Length: 580
Image 1 (cartoon, one colour):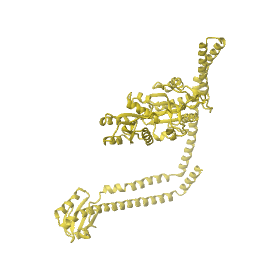
Image 2 (cartoon, rainbow, N blue to C red):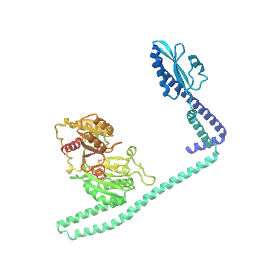
Image 3 (spheres, one colour):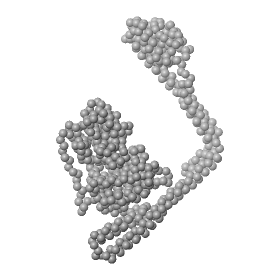
Image 4 (cartoon, rainbow, N blue to C red):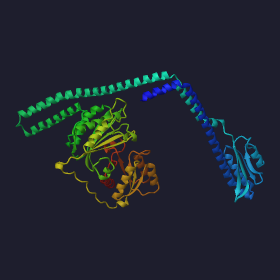
């Protein structure tokens, strides 16, 4: 339908080309002249208004001097306009039209009527304003401005002239032979169709090539090796059923690992198929540790990898195979964000998402989770990109280098598992993606509730300054501190925070974000220390503590709380800060 309309338009242009060109040129000329006249009128009105304002100001200034006949004061007021280079003549006349005082680069008329009579022939704008006091006219102020330079007039008309020139060029293009335009349009449509087919074939070829390399290079060899391993273990178990129990346990553990490896190989072969989840109590730290070697080979030699395991880690209720796939997807995205090399940190820890945090999130159930944080030192993402990263088929990679399904698959898997995904990124600082996996419970018992808060006395004697450029985070932190019994002052950036500190505000603790526009949290802490060295500092950030310390953003030993945090976690961190 669009192509048919375009063809009809080309036909109309072909038959009525001369008329259309002539009519369009006439309309453009009239429009350009109208714009020029309108611009000139607005300029004259504005200049006259400004001149009248100056004249009125001078009239108000000399009214008292005229009433007292103080000629020296009148002369001083008139001479003050010498600072304005646009004013060439200034005259102050009495109520009879006689000149009292004035100055000018041109001759100042001795009589007011001479000045008024000379206005039409004089170059530049001239205005006169009566000097009034209590309804009595004491005299008149006369001001004449210099004529406007030619270059200013040309600059004012440049827009209309440029519009006329550009439109004429466009009409000249439209006036070309319509048959050539039609033929070019047909060739363009054909080339676009051929290019789309070629790009689709290229993407399919690249995908199949990648799958072929993966299945041929890994699945084939792994299946052969796993067949030997599983076969020999099975034989060993059959031939020595009454062997030492410890030995049989070693065999059973080896069989379990080999079967799990075989299952992973089968999932790689059927990666594009939709499969139901099989969640089981899983040692997430072990999964991450086992995957780190495969991920290291995927990342290449220019990217280092570090794994950090939290103490006393719970088991997660999750499909271990799908978790491995999610980790691979995140690692590949991190690799693409670090084309010149960098560092990838995989960190596991226990976490509790309370009701206050869950209320502001999408489909988050308060409770206990196992957190897996994947942090890279890549280029980071802007806020508009962050808002779309989990949308299917959204990608910032060039055509053919990504399907846009990696993060959406991770998001869908985590949500299907009853978990939560949070992402933090700053352009030039890298990205942290946190996966919150639900804690596995034994025999259906619910996870333990959040430990009760311990009351702390004397908190009203402590004042906390909260600094974060994100309004939601800043408000939550302030509300949490009030809930805990602290006096709170908040600021949106380092400049505002320093203004509060310099203003004498009482301050015992500084709770600041690490990465902020302008001055960072570390720079703010250094500045505050110069004014109030006794202030204690607690940093908060969306990056994990290990990732930040190892990336060199903060020194070891710095007190840090990772976002998102609960009120109880904030309470414990502040107590540790004050006890240290």
